[in-house]
Length: 70
Image (cartoon, rainbow, N blue to C red; front, side, top):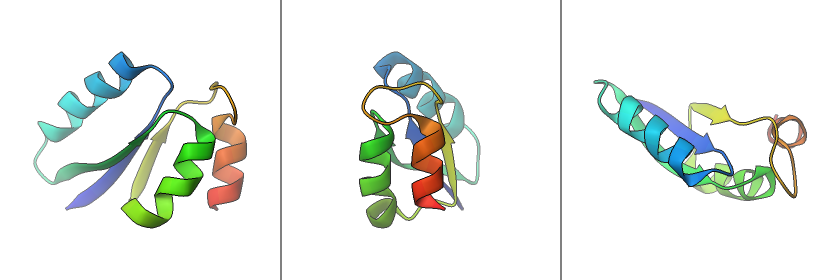
């Protein structure tokens, strides 16, 4: 099972991706975050294999969040 975390400031985008991903066998969404700061905090708890992250978000963008996560 591949564990995916979704990060986007738009709830409709996260919902759409969740619906698409969870329809695929072998994928499960383990967490959602509304910005990069929340993603950094959530990654230790959710332990995703993959993070699908928006680049442009308030508070902390996806680029900076990726730097901190890596």
